[in-house]
Length: 311
Image (cartoon, one colour):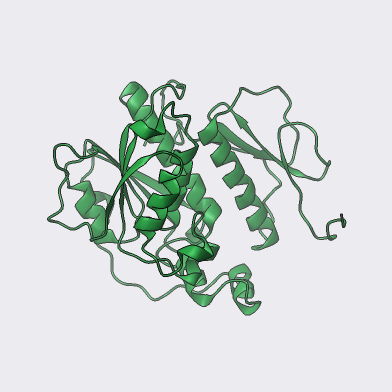
């Protein structure tokens, strides 16, 4: 085995061990920890969701350091709870009670990350779980770099059908919908009352929020180059309407790329379309989508377990 190049950055999984100069990531209960230092005390056991969040945050820090040349990246200890990202006063839960029916609206980078995370949950019988998968797009070559489940064999095929085949192989039951969610779309009796939304279409997000789901958790990613690692979650019904959560905004000029992303385009490692997605209305960095999905799925499990969420 050849040694790593001199500029390589090591990411060690676990609070102890590893090289002295390695960045470390580990789960402490529901909390993901990323630090340049070893953990001082033994932490609590993590779970499938905090493990997903831990890996995503570790990769985000490496990306900020190695690609974007962020001088702060990898030099500080960061902690983020999937269960209480806003430090809400909710007790921690065990993954003993899990959603039996979920409607996933959008199967792009966010939706696929959520579906992948759901596939990791410790269901006793996945055959008792129904997933409604809704999307209108086919997979393209640009999706290979940013969507966690998309494979070359999926290119040219509807994302709903490829995602359904993937999750059915794990034993889940699925239904697919291949038309847009609009103002006339409503949640009906007998359909999943829990919806996880991951789309970059403002009209679809508002329509879903007003469709009378028992609980809808919407995950959104940064809308500009300066927000490239931002995550926003909204839950409905809630204290705000969809119009208050997503007020109308004037169309702005396409943002310029940060230097690290521009260099990837010049090197041919990322196409311009993917880069604009990163710098523009939605995010193409898969690790950020995975982090958002971990928090989104954690909130769904929290709602099932104790009837409340932190978002």
